[in-house]
Image 1 (cartoon, one colour):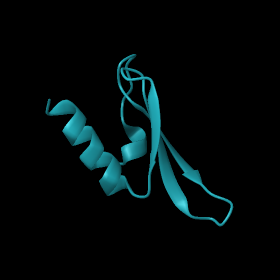
Image 2 (spheres, rainbow, N blue to C red):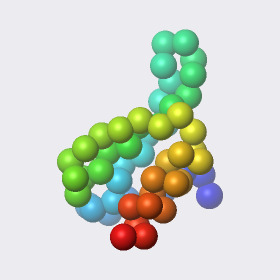
Image 3 (cartoon, rainbow, N blue to C red):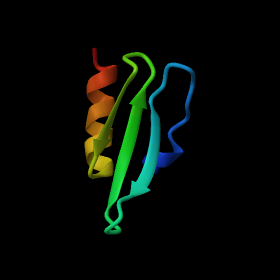
Image 4 (tube, one colour):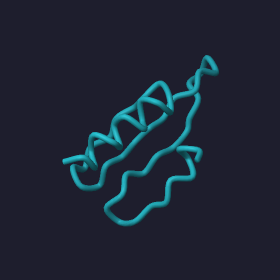
Length: 56
């Protein structure tokens, strides 16, 4: 499953795959529960963050 195909609900994080001006890919994640946004350099980092978020 590609991380960008993550199904969203109102409480699910919003994940966007982006590129910086040098062409490097990163993932911008917005968490509506905490109202915070953060960036990750790989899908693996996003997956880890999601696993930690839902293991609480």
